Length: 358
Image (cartoon, rainbow, N blue to C red):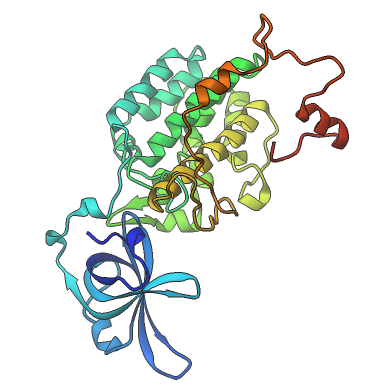
């Protein structure tokens, strides 16, 4: 299969892709052309058809599979396909695995992991709340299928479940280092933070936003879901409800990132920062894979990270480097000669803070 990510300028393309966007446009010279977004599980690419655009456009719809013939070309820094012909392909003749990526983890195993975590919670109210979701078969069917995003991170079947399991593990690890953090609260906050995405996103032939997802968004939908579940649990503490609502409403961190509130409790801060970390690392790894970046190579410009990304070289001298470390104390900390400062300490004293790229 000629995957979209593998296409290079000058490649002749004869392949089946999914139409995710369709529009009849008019060029500056008055000529009508067909503008498409074509997709497979590796990405999307623009497609342009100039011959008989109106006639061809009437033979298929958005979300149809089409077989195209054309040439891959670079237009203003972006790859596109100049199509010569296009024909609709029946869904039954398409291998859907070429268009929908799945989490590398088994969904049932991840659900069982979440159930074990729920059983370990000492707070009875939080345990009952988490179990109210995990014992709901209709919810689980959606949860195991829903992606965590349309494009940016964990954007595949089961991506939301995978993301939630990762975030809970990270949050509980961080809580071990800060005894004042409520471990049960941060666990359930991490579990619930993106729960509204089961209603915001839908997977058909591709990942799409639902109508209520576009109109309301996953934060508001998740807030509603928390309220509904809490009401069904007798005696659920009002303060605890308030804290869970706050974690939900603040998990994007800043107003400019769509967060109705900014984090004002420790647990909300943990969920906010680790959610961002998990998303960025997943996107980083997926970008290296999709762009087939070799060691010592760079990705194209990443919109999510607002920079180019580098894949470092692997080297065989790591063990020797560790053996040549400065002599360590019994506590495992390197000895620093008197009168000398580490570079980090020197930088901090000079500027008042550590450099961002340290």
